[in-house]
Image 1 (tube, rainbow, N blue to C red):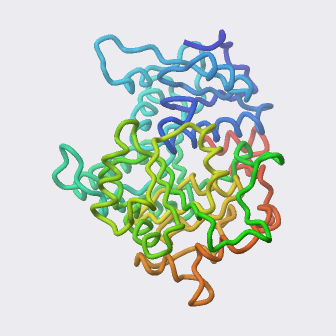
Image 2: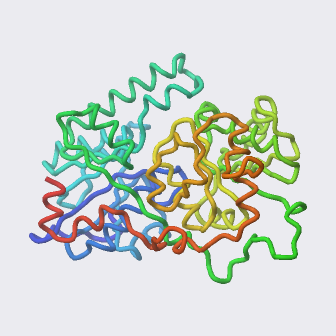
Image 3: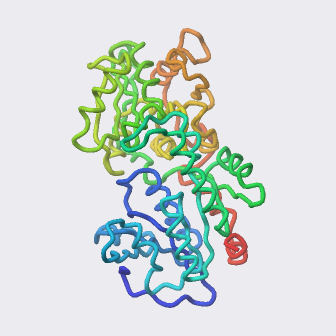
Length: 408
């Protein structure tokens, strides 16, 4: 149902519907991407566009927060006899003349196809990951005997959706280049997310910067890994790499891994202790958390690491940068994040554990050590970009004519 009675589309406005599982971010990166895209669309194009998010379910708090951001939440009605909530999104949202539907990946692309078919609206398909790359490194999950074959099937399904959509948009330059080769007859666009204003630390927030008289040799140094975890994804996310790298350092270096399903922390801890050289004293496993708790954890971190062997855009890096935290990434993690503030000096090309402890400008200095021994500069000064930077796509479409062209 709608959070308020929706009116028919005015002739000079465009109704854009995002397909989402939720408004908040309890399900990971896609939820965050969809919400932030919808918020920025409503913020900067409100004179042209009505923005809706079509979701499985929503609370009063969700609807109020969306309303405060000029986004209308529409809660899909459950399909009788179906146990798959995705089926409910295949039915066009009631009370809205849909002009553009936005699907994201395989999960929401199928529902976008149905809505476009029934309403004759334009369909924008967003791609956030290359499944073939993930399949090379994923471990077998329950019911999957060959992850490469499984991800090849997912990749082919993704391409089938792209071929039917009116517009294809990839998140980041590297992914766009790959999909341009996959889809030579289709114009593949690109969007590069900006930083997150809501993660910018308060002036009154406590800081973990070292004081001039504090001994850096005694202070704990906390390296954070963040993101929803599945056992089959630990290797593809490179968690063995960063765990072994931390193990090569002194005991005061700590690895805090945030992303375990509730009640499964012990299983992930056992995996680290069995498959890496990290010690029990250096390792902490925490459950996946909402954005409010995540903001608090960023203030605790000295460094955020993304050592993935294969990755989508990786929004967690932008969240960390927005919180003014140093980020250490692998070269396999999409390099477009450099455009949003990831320093090249903290980009590691090797997958060897030692490279993550020795890859600084000086052989005897480590990225981890360098980060802790220098004062963190304000993000704006380091990158020349404001923390309220909006997605580049929002800058490219200033008029109704341009929006219509973009969606045509």
